[in-house]
Amino acid sequence: MALLFEVSEFKDRLRKVKEGMLRSGLQVLIISDPANMNYLTGYDGWSFYVHQGLVVALDHDEPIWWGRGMDANGAKLTTWLKHDNIRPYADDYVQNMFKHPMSFVADILREKGWESRSIGVEKDNYWFTGMCLDTLRKELPQGTVHDATSLVNWVRIIKSPAEITFMKQAAEVCKHVMDTAIESINIGTLESEAAANVYHAVVKGTEKFTGDHPAIFPIMPSNERTSAAHLGWDPDRKYASGDIILLELCGVRFRYHCPLSRTVYIGEPPEELKEVADVVIDGIAKTLDFVK
Image (cartoon, rainbow, N blue to C red; front, side, top):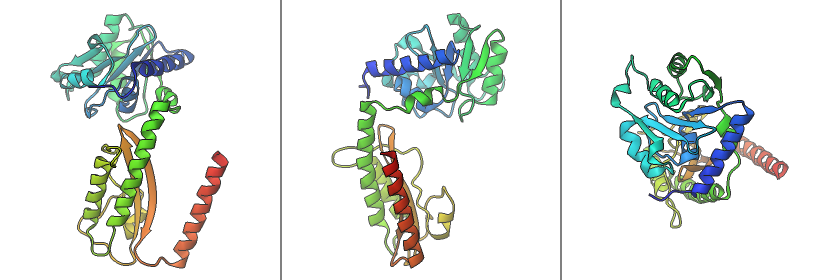
């Protein structure tokens, strides 16, 4: 498979992460956030339901990918790493109360002579558990473990020209997705039918760019459900006159997202709602002017 970015770009990202490690006094970094794994290596497997990650060391030229054995081929297909730096663990580590994958990671660190180093971990994310931390500290008592939750994220904030290109393409897909959603909302149409049209548009994309699956389902509640932040559609309900619908959708291009939010009213909106819309539009315009 062709990489989405040049190897030189991945190496530049790695260099910047290592600079951040130096500033933080870290010699080794264990990465468990799937987005950060993708950023540094290109890894694109939907495998984060089990423990997986990267090990980055200041004196090692590539990250080391570690994960479940059945996912190793995914790493070989989607990353720029040498196969020696793809380290799968056996299936008896999966959901085993007595054998944790972080013990496997500790074995890698001992093998490399890194067990006594200053080790950073991403403590505050969904994929690094309390058991991960306990196991790592138990296995490597001579090392020191520190929080490095946002270290890679701060590097990711500044996008490269290649990344910006994908984001612009995602924006074009997003416009198509939103247009599709608005066109699909009509009196008597099932909310689930509108949602299906949105999914189709997100994945199919435009005539110029194909899409990708989004990180979250289409948020498109109606009426009183709009008072909640993260509800989807009401599957068996049909749209009716006077409905208000919140749309929070996105276009996606190779995992790069462009989100967009709109509010749809079926019929003539009340004056109060028009006034609120005017205030919001004015606020957004002033904010954009300030940012510029």
